[in-house]
Length: 109
Image 1 (spheres, rainbow, N blue to C red):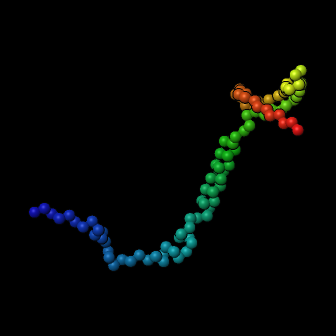
Image 2: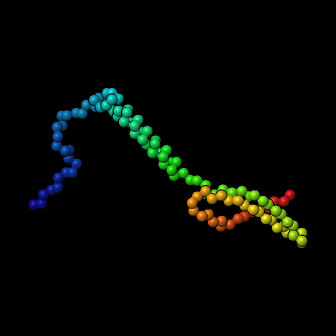
């Protein structure tokens, strides 16, 4: 005859009369909390790493600029205006900066 499989829910062998004393684990904070000095050192180290990471990986503005001159000329037909603008752009990085497009909006009252 084939053997019947053993019950997988049987209790592991051990001392059934032993009852754990939970008061030993919860009687004082010295047993449940880690020592204060290593925790403070770890907090300072983690804070220093976060500070270093924030300052070395922050984004910076690659360029800044301003409008230095602006000239407006009305065309002879009277329905058009020619606007000339001189821009000064300062590159703050080592890489070249490319201007892809410029847009302007004229508001008249």
